[in-house]
Structures are given as C-alpha cells and as structure tokens.
Image (cartoon, rainbow, N blue to C red; front, side, top):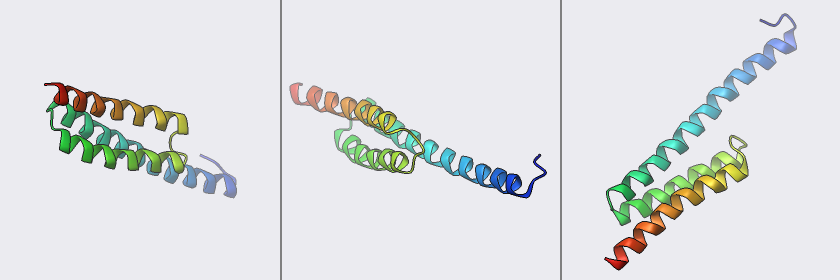
Length: 93
C-alpha cells in the first residue's frame, strides 16, 4: 500500500480504470459470442444484426484504448468471416 498521497490517488485511479476496462472487454466478448451462436444456429438475419452490434462494441473498445486497434481488427474480421461463410452456405444450399 502506498504512503505518498499522489501514489494513493494513482492506485485508486488504476483500480477504477481496470474495472472499467474489464467491463468493456467482457461486453465485446459477450457480443462476439452472440454472433457465433447465431451462425451456429444458421440464423442469418440474427447473425447480421448481432454482427452490427458486436462491431460497434469492438470499435468502441479500441477507440478508448481498452484493446489495441489491430486486436479489434482481428476480432471484427473473425466474426465477419463467420457470417459471410454462413451467408455463402445458405445461398448455395
């Protein structure tokens, strides 16, 4: 535990930021899982709607510095690819 006043404040700030960042990460993981679940159920309309929502949360997390912009791009690419594959599969069969 810090003794210096500024160090105590820094510790309080770090705790708040860590909790806030964890909230953003949990939310984007949840939204991404919803997309993948809709793809697994072969529900294209739901998958597209969930994709739009998940993209928004991922972009927001990257903009706030919670995750790196390349990580955001990788996550968005992964879920968009799964929706595109589902769309292609449904169009063929």
